[in-house]
Structures are given as C-alpha cells and as structure tokens.
Length: 79
Image 1 (tube, helix red, strand yellow):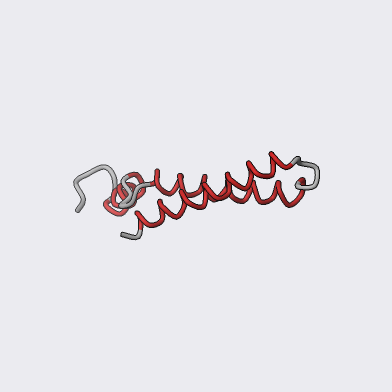
Image 2 (spheres, rainbow, N blue to C red; image 1 turned 30 degrees about the vertical axis):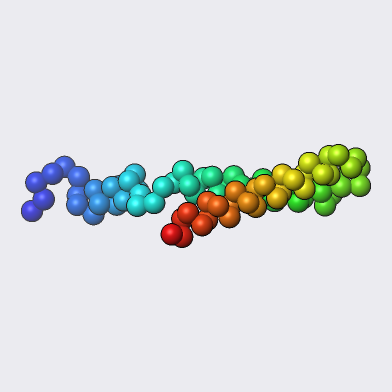
C-alpha cells in the first residue's frame, strides 16, 4: 500500500516531465534557429523581388549564420 498522497505512477510521470534528462533550453534554441531559417527563406521567396540588394544580402547572411549555429548546437548534442 502506498503511504503517500500522490500515487506512484503519477509521481514518476511528473518527475520525468518536470526534470527531463536533456536540456529543454537546447531544444528551444534549435527551434528558434530553425524558425529563423524558415521565416527568412519564406520572406525571400515571397517578397524577394520587392527587396533591395542590401536587404537580400542581409537575409542570406542571416540564413547562413543560422545554419552555422544550428550545426554547432546539433554537433554538441550528438557528442
């Protein structure tokens, strides 16, 4: 018989949920980088003809930097 107020399966599930084995901060960083890449590509795809050359260059640099940072984060995760 369980002497606590909370049943054991509920307690185990809540511990796994609130204390994950991997860092959720890393997951959030990866999600932000992926979303920055996708948004930049969509802006270039739909509004690329209306943008001037400097704006397009900045978007391309932003995409490349985001890819580089995403690759760095993923390399650290897979170690």
